[in-house]
Structure formats: structure tokens, C-alpha cells
Amino acid sequence: MKKHKKEQHEEHMDETWLVPYSDILTLLLALFIILYAAGQIDQKKYEQIMAGFNSALTGGTSVFQSTSKLELDLTDDNMGRNSEQVTTEKESLLAAARAQEERDMEAIKEKIDQYIKANNLTAQLETRITDEMLIISIRDYALFDSGSAVIKPEAQKLAYTIAEILAEYPNYNVEVAGHTDNLPINTPQFPTNWDLSSQRSLNFMKYLLQAEGLDQSRFRAVGYGEFQPIASNDTEEGRAKNRRVEVNILRNFVQSSDYADNTNNKQ
Image 1: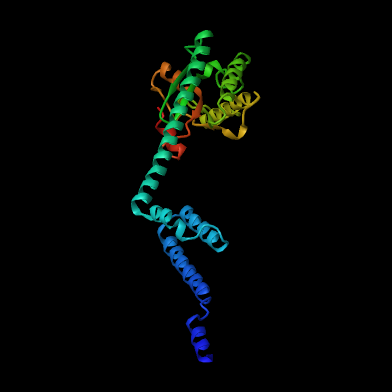
Image 2 (image 1 turned 135 degrees about the vertical axis):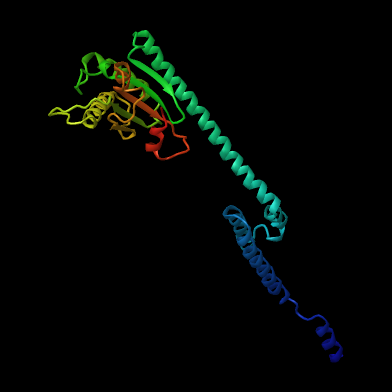
């Protein structure tokens, strides 16, 4: 009788050790999945797997229950499509930003042109759009007396009008550029054309910045002297065109980041 009971007890041995053993196997499998995934997927997918692993450890959805979704994400085809989607989205955003910039340039030009027409200033001002910027070109006699860098009182209204328009478009950098003809100047105040063009651009920029709503960090003044002509200096008419101040509203989307090169190509 005792022997029979002993044999029955051996037939029903305690199998609770299988539970921790299966847990160890599950965790090892999860570890190998993570190691594999870390070398195959991007950071976002890695974080998704880690979330699934943490869920398994804390009693949530098991690793195996989420395996099918992870396998879909790990395939090369899906990874390629995700990458293409990101690229497409970036290209779409860039195209939209470029289109908005083009609309802004056209709108600024139209407002300046309307002011020019309303005030009969076609002989003194002109605008044009290039691949790098919108250029507002002002003849020197509209702003200064000959050989002077002092802004004429009647030019202050022009500066204020331009500044008001610029304030409506705060996302663009602005360069105020002074230009001269090639006739040398040698006065106590302006020993060279460099000095004259630089002082003229600086003074006009100061008038622009008197208007409210302008971020001064987006402005700069530069003098180009006689070295950026737009007409021949062999005639008085050509030299008159070359003596100018330009307000350049710079595009944000240009291929070259070196603006010194851009200004060489703006003519």
C-alpha cells in the first residue's frame, strides 16, 4: 500500500519550475530581438520595441503579441517607404516655403511700385527680383546732395514708407548697399569712394530702423564703392545710374550660402 502511494506521488511530480524556465526563455528571445532591431532600424522604431519590451516585463502586452507589428516595421521595403515618405514631406514643405517666399517678394515689389507710381518717382526708383533677392534701387540724388552722405529731408518719407513695408515681412534679412561711380573722390570726410558708399548706406539704414517693428539684427549696411556698376561709367548717364543706394531683401532659399557670391551675380 505504501509502495503504491509512493509511485503515485512520483507520477505527479511538482512542475512549477517550468514557469520561471519559460520566463527566462521569453526574456532571452526578447533580448535577441532588441539586439537585432538595434542594428536594423532607426531610433523611432527602437523606442517602439523598447516600449513593447517594458510592457512585457510589467505585465502588459507580451513581446509575442506585438511581434507581427514589429516584423512589418523591420522589413526593408517598409523602411524604404518610410524614408521616401519623410523625403517627400520635406520636399513638399520646402516647395511650399519657396512658393510663399515668391509670393512675398512679388507683394513687396508691388507695394513699392505702387508708391513709386503714386509719387512720380519712376526716374529715381526701380525694383527688380532676382534669384537671390528683391532689389529696391534708389538713385543717389533722390537721397543725397553731390558728395554728401546726409539724407535729404524729402527722402525721409521714402525711408519711412520702405520701412513700413519691410515691417510687414519680418522673416527676411535686409542689406542696405551703397554704390558710387568710378570718379575718384578725395575730401577730408570721404577720402575714397569706399568711404562715401559705406557712409551713405549706413545713414539710410539708420533712417529705416527708426520705424517700429523692425528687427535690427536682420539688417546690415555695406559699401561697394565703384565696384558693382550696373551701367557703363564711360557716360554721365551710366555714372548716374551707378550712383545709388540699394535696399536688398534677401531670399531665405538660395543655393549658395555665401552672400558675397550672390551679390556678384545679382546684376
